[in-house]
Amino acid sequence: MFNIRELIRVYMNEAGAEDLAAGGDGQQQPSSLLGGDGQQQQATEPFLAALPEEGDTEGWSNLYAKLGRPESADGYELPVPEGDSGEFAGAAAGRMFELGISKSQAQGIAEWYNTQQAQAIEQYQQQQAQKNTENVAAIRKEWGNNFDANLAVANKAVSVYLPPEAIAALNETGLGSNPHFVKAFLKIGQSLSEAKVINGEPSQSGPKSTADIFYGSN
Image (cartoon, rainbow, N blue to C red; front, side, top):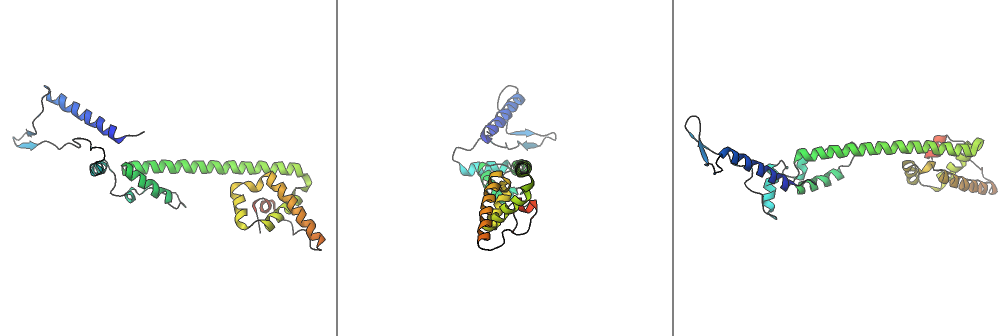
């Protein structure tokens, strides 16, 4: 796991080794030097003299600012995918700020995450489409010439007993083409048709397309 404290210690150790090599005799060098024109020049202030103590909130906050952390979580300006509410990005920005992550690092992480999510969604949609195709083929093979008629009955039952929100959920999850679900609603639709015949009502509505039957239509 990335540990900013260890990284800073490495930088400090390397800087110390370089200073020692420059001194030659290992003695501490003077704090000021003479420039080429004979004028005294002050030594450059070190980036970090020492790590803040554990629990030194202000000290660590100042260090994180030097390393590129913005003044607030909003300063990360994380990229948000089209159509996304941005709620997750906001929560992630808050946590990144607590951890002292720089703006460039935060944006790099967000871009990587968004790419991974987009690829996962695309893969899932492809798998669902393939599964739906396989489900339709299996039911068509089982029902043969009765395929369209049976689906019309099943779809009628879905339209009668399920609200639009439930039908939308079936479309999103792919359950609407599941053979077990379709055959269950075929039985429900057949019972519904029988009841209408007994009551002297028409047994079925007009035929619907396969797409309407599988993915819902009111």
